[in-house]
Length: 368
Image 1 (cartoon, rainbow, N blue to C red):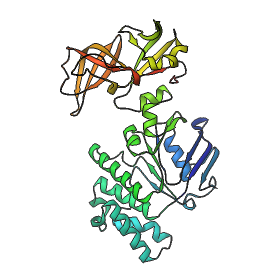
Image 2: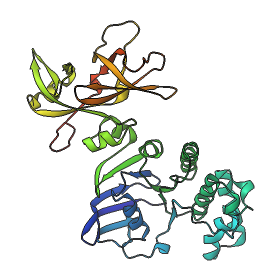
Image 3: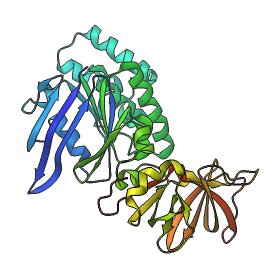
Image 4: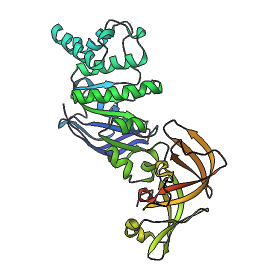
């Protein structure tokens, strides 16, 4: 295994910057996910690490070895693609062993590695089938097995689950995480799906327009986003954003929503943090899961504010129900228990957990 270091990495296509000077350190054995919207540069970054894209500027080190001009086959990496890239005329066993045979490994060594990988992936009984006889999930496991048997220093995943149905994606996420716990290969995984990123990653690298917005653990990214982009990208449904202004009220602060709506007191613990922004136009960010039903015993809890809303749309999800309503001229989403959810057009009291709110500078997009 090996760590990966990226310094000042740029990629330009016909004067268009696809990757704009990023720096990443990935530890030996770490599972890091590059996530962001289409066109943010994540797959281009992965392909430069693999040697499949020429680097415009910058340096890539694998195990402290500069690999800028090293051929892909000599970088000791394995790659799992979105489109399985299996040979249709070969069995799963032959597909998995192909790279080892090309490198001249002994037959006994090949057999041992393929058998072990097939056991990890629960495909031992499928080894004599060809890709056309396998489901999408089974083919993806064979593709992962082909990478694992190489015992590479670094394993790269380029959106490997995007062609699978929703239920199978969930199952394969679990399989990939379980597999990483067993083999502990340094892994870099690219996806546009923030749920995949949150569930798989030890650390997440969020990219936007060729730049890194934030790097952190899933909890750090979710609880302490550094920019509005990160706050809105991570979380499903997305964070609610409302334009507001901070005002003084007695010894504390209150949030006045621009466009109408209730005044929301700032928790005492956050007064000192936000006092410098008094009177400025800001953006209030609060997640749907932090707007919830009022407790049975009634009365506001510390750090919570009660608001009455008129429900526009109800989306039952089984465990939870999403309620959509308007505050002023802004649509807002809340996540409540299905037991208490009311129907469209009804008035319902909700509690906003203000200790979990974020205030954002609308000019810079920075979370204050």
